Length: 161
Image 1 (cartoon, rainbow, N blue to C red):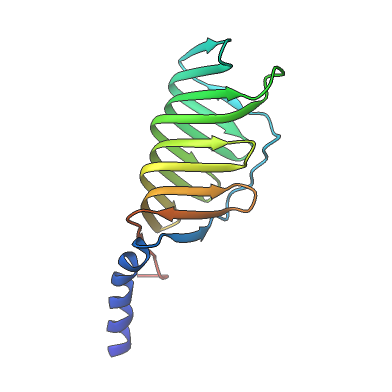
Image 2: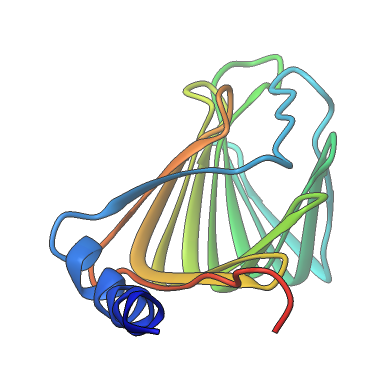
């Protein structure tokens, strides 16, 4: 009985212990394909030829392989004249979905060249029945490893309740 009480107490302390330094996690459902086509749909599109940027706004949905990203506005930056996308900057409430995870944040930067996704502002990550929150989450899309920083809090489901 005492062991169970101590275990429960440690679970409540865990969010505070990891919040000071951040926490590393692995996202199992990410299968990034940086060379796969990027499909974007939105209500509006504004293109600035001089800066090499396009801004999609209104119900933006982006798909690349098994990854899905939805946001209010997404700015696309192109790296060359052939139209290769180098980065996506999303804002206006962002949802990132894979086969087994879902994350929400205020904004996100998807660096296709660096194979990295950074979500910022009230980040909520759900993996099945478990949830993690933080100020910022950075995901290495080639490895599936992620780091959550800034007031990290966790709820881990431990089997049947």
